[in-house]
Image 1 (cartoon, rainbow, N blue to C red):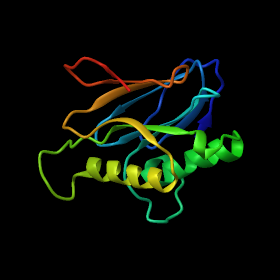
Image 2: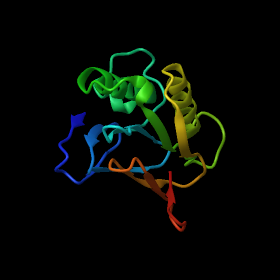
Image 3: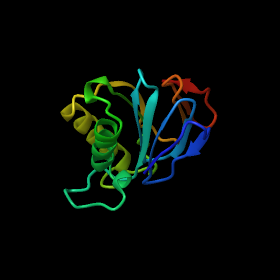
Image 4: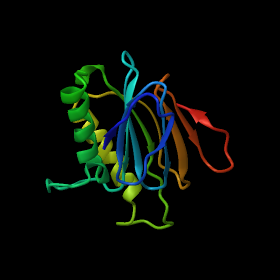
Length: 163
């Protein structure tokens, strides 16, 4: 995890990574079954993006908290609250990704499991999900603009959507 200075403009967040920054930064990620968890504090224009790969850490200590949806959300909120002094009740969430990348049913549906875990964990922490672009069968490229809180979602062959 890095808390970045506002002088850096665009940061790509890779699989299992978590980044937190302030306006005018933009955080980007390319997502398939991974889930992009965008947490935003509108008053300070501070945001965090976790590029979570799997749904649950199962209580195990993790060296990379961004790898799992549950630990990524917990970690982001710890940084917001403890390091930045941002109260949880002032944070909002946007979710992207979680596609079904394998044309089958069964245990390979990591995307669905990631979505459900994020919704469960955010509800538990009373963080509202104000918008989402999840599921489907195509990957996405996202850009999280910390100046506005908007997330631009682009799927191949489709018009970009703004969350």
